[in-house]
Amino acid sequence: MSECIFCKIVKGELPTKFLYEDDKVAAFQDINPVAPNHILIIPKKHIASMVEVTEEDTQEILPYIFKAAQHLAEEFGMDKEGFRIVNNCGAKGGQTVAHLHFHLLGGRQMLWPPG
Ligand code: 5GP
Ligand code: ZN
Image (cartoon, rainbow, N blue to C red; front, side, top):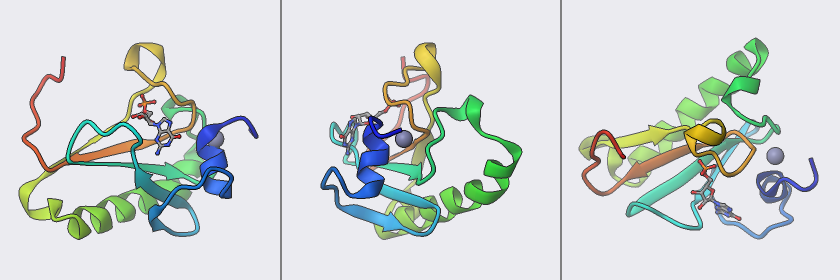
């Protein structure tokens, strides 16, 4: 998956400051933020989208996604005021990067539905 931009970020081929990192996941600022806090949390392993996640991935990676989200929410002061986590999946879900990622959004009032 050498052409995947998020794999390139994980490998350090696209200079990107990690806001959080452990063995399984990495997190960094979205290049085009839609909220004062807009952080992408991704598995280091290339998984194209939510529908590609295996049972093994769920057990091995999901706990680390949650841990990263909690850590970042606290670090950026979103744990008290609230935040939103979004996964866009596939064309109609609005997914534009084919490497599983979770948007951690905060710092403003979220509205529902988003439109
Ligand atoms: P999606 O639309 O697939 O749910 O979200 C992809 C997100 O990745 C978008 O919000 C977009 O701004 C962000 N993005 C795309 N390319 C890059 C990049 O090279 N670096 C960073 N930090 N974010 C990116
Ligand atoms: Zn990838």
